[in-house]
Length: 147
Image (cartoon, rainbow, N blue to C red; front, side):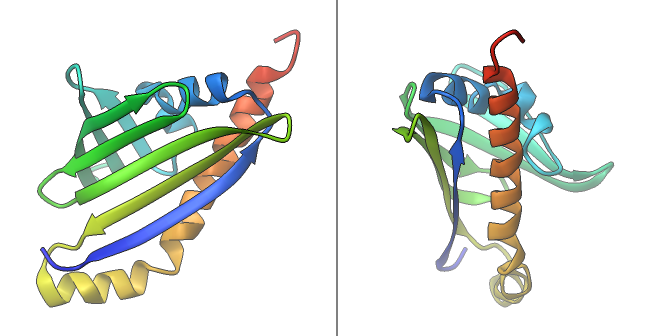
């Protein structure tokens, strides 16, 4: 593993922080908003997420290292391919919430990993932003009275 790389995105959500945090940490619901990803809890403080299509993708195992509902969850990525740290923070903002998702990842495969990151780097923040836009739409829809 080499130097860490960083990716982050933020979004405004028209729903209260408690609702947004509950949705973010409802691991089986990740498939509804996180691009190409399904997730599940595997233990009291452990998770796994598969990102990909069919058999093509990777498994990301994680340990929850900090849990402060309804505002903060930190994870340590512990998989064979994905290692590093991630954080999702939810704060009250302008009648709704602001969510920030940040990742600090250690690249595998030495030079090959750095070349792969160089190719993927422009797309990773865009995928994070797309996922957060999908989360915001889902949370706003669920926050609508009468649902």
